[in-house]
Length: 305
Image 1 (cartoon, rainbow, N blue to C red):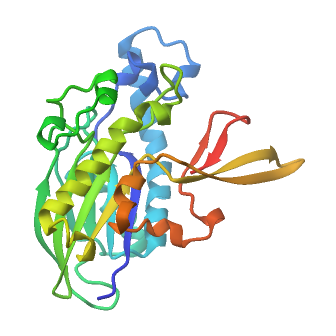
Image 2: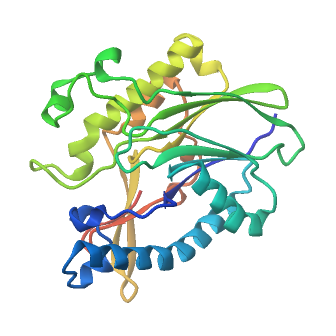
C-alpha cells in the first residue's frame, strides 16, 4: 500500500461571520483595531467587509498549500462545517487539482467557536488503489474523570474533573486503502494562549495538551490492545500546538540572520512517542527543515516551530 497523507491547519475556514472580537480583544482582527469603532452595529458591518476581502486571498493560499502536498488524504483543522468545506473545495481547490477530494467528513466537536477537525479523501490513490470510508467515531465527549487524567495542575488552570478533555475532538476515521485497513486520529490540541502566573503561554497550558495526548494514546491502546497498538496501521494527524524542537531566529536582513536549534525537555508529543509507541515523522527531516509555523512577538522573540 502506497499512500500520501497530509495534515494542514486551514485557519478559520468558516461560512459565517465571527463578531466576538467586539467584546473580546483576543479575537479582534488587527486591522479593525486600527480604527475607532463606536458601536457594535458599526463593528459588524466593518467585520463583514474585512472578512470577505481577506478570505479570498487567504483561501487561495490555503488551496495552493494543499495542492502542493499532492496528498491522497488531507486532514484539516479549523473547519466550520461540511458546507464550508464543500464551498472551499469547489471554489478554490478544484481550480488547482480538479475533481480530487470527493469524500469529505467532519463532525461538531468542543470548540467554543465551532471550528472542527475534518478530512478530505480522493476516491483512489495516485497509484490507483481505492480509498474507502468505513466509519467515523467522535471522542469529544470523554472527560478527565472518565480517563483518570485529572491533576492538580489542570485544577489550577480551572479544568474540573467532569469537563471534556479535548478542546476540539479526537476524531477516529476508519478507512481501507486498496483493501488494507488504516485508522486516522484527527486532533487539534489546546492552543498556547497568553502568558499567565509567571509562565509563558506554552508552559502555562502544557497540562491540557499533555492530558489530550494521554487520552489519544489511551483511545488507540484500547482500540488495538496496549501490547499490539504500536504494530497496527494508524496515524495521528493534526495540529498539536506544541513542538519538541524549535529554531531560534536572531539578526536581520541587513546584518544577517542567525539560527539556533533548541530541543525542548517537555512536550506533549513525548507522551505519544514514549516507549516507541509511534514516530514523529517530522523528525525524519533535517533540523532546519522541520518547522511548519513561524512564531514572533517582535524582533526579540522569533521561532521556527
